[in-house]
Amino acid sequence: MGEEIVRKPFVIAAAVAALLAAQPAFAEIGRVKSHVGPVSIQRGGSMIAAKPGLTLEQGDVVVTGKTGRVGIAFLDNTRMALGPNSRITLSEFSYDRARQTGTFVTSVNRGSLGVVSGNIAKSKRDAMRVRTPTSMLGVRGTKFVVEVK
Image (cartoon, rainbow, N blue to C red):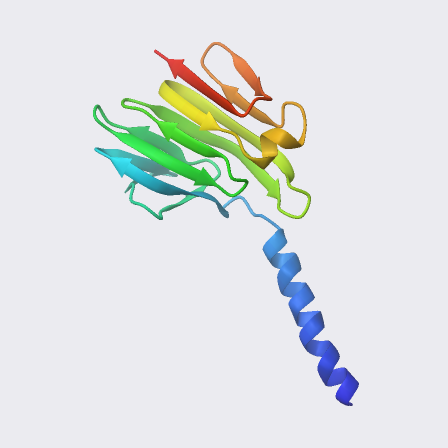
C-alpha cells in the first residue's frame, strides 16, 4: 500500500509533463519584452494593445504604428525587434524544449524586422524561415535584418 502511494505522484507528474510538452495552436510562443509608441497584436478578430509581458501565440499579427517599435522574446531564445510601420505574422512556431528543435515561420508584410536567432534556427537547415511578399529566406545565421517597403 505504501509503495502505491509513492507511485501515484510520479504517474501524475509524468502525465502533467506530457501535457505541458504538447503545444496546441493557442499556446504561448513568446512575449512582448518592450515597446515604444503604438504597437498592437491582431489575434483572430481582436486587436490587443501591446505591453511588456503580453503573451504571443501562433497566428498573431504584430503591427507597429508610425512611431512604434517592439521587442519580442520567443521560447527558443530567438529575439526580434520590429521598427515603425511594420506588420509581421507569426505564421508557424513549434518547439521541442527537450530536443531544442522545431520550426519557425514569420511573414513580413511591411516594415523592418531585426532578428537574433535562437535554438530553432541553429537546430537544422531552414528550420527558421522568413517570408516576404517577393521571397522566402531560410535562416542559418544568428543575426539578420529584413526590410519590406
